[in-house]
Length: 358
Image 1: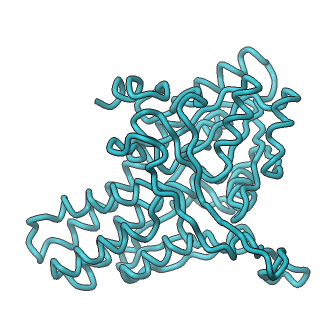
Image 2 (image 1 turned 90 degrees about the vertical axis):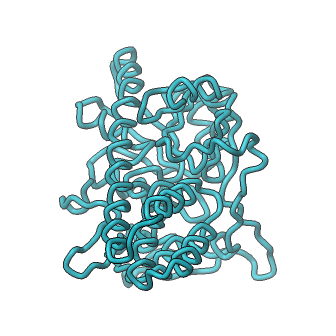
């Protein structure tokens, strides 16, 4: 997708320097900075401090992290240790573990003189596959938006939470891909963008990328969605997911569960968009998903730009106050209207997912 009318992916290999390039998302929307990843520790740190974020992009970065580890030292023990550190960098998004395990399986038994090329090729294949999946997610989700428009004959109002846009994937996004495809087809859409505290990924990233594609959007406080649904101002909710269980339970950014409850109470369709790499076929219950708890400073402080156009971090809580910063919650399958995947739209259930993927 575009930034200042130039097409980008979120991560790519610079063949001239053999470094990995990323868009530093901690600087958006106020600064657009492309950063180099030169070592596996660079990749681990980028994931930890959320220079890259979003389940598919975390997975892709981890894949390139393995390639960087191979480039540093193709000793088998070093690569294994690096893979373990990558998996530990963020615990909730299943794509991370999936991508590392896929890379390690691919590199198993390959001669040391060929292993770097094999690692770079497989990492690129993961990225190419994710982009293709997101395009198909968009085309499948487009059918839902189109159906709403054909009945309504007016602008389709879509509510989304956090950033499941192209900045969270390689391109197109998951929750935003149907929106982009609808816009390109000429269907009038408007997006309600939850600001998504504490890191404000909705306000900072989703609104930013929608603006770049000239899609009308309005940032709202996280607790506004309910009253908008009561007023009939939301036609559909579409969110992403960091891990979806085979029973249809959805783990996504904190606050998603409350949106699903409000949607259920107001008969608003609530869809979750995801590639198959985000499905966890092993964990059976939502309560068993590891929920990341991040530094409380993300809550107590906020980053913005001051009157001198300088980025500043300021304290917004009383100094003596404590804060808990849980990054994700789990929405039970019963509140999910459907799962929009690259293979089609499934009901949020074991039976529905098995029909598509097993």
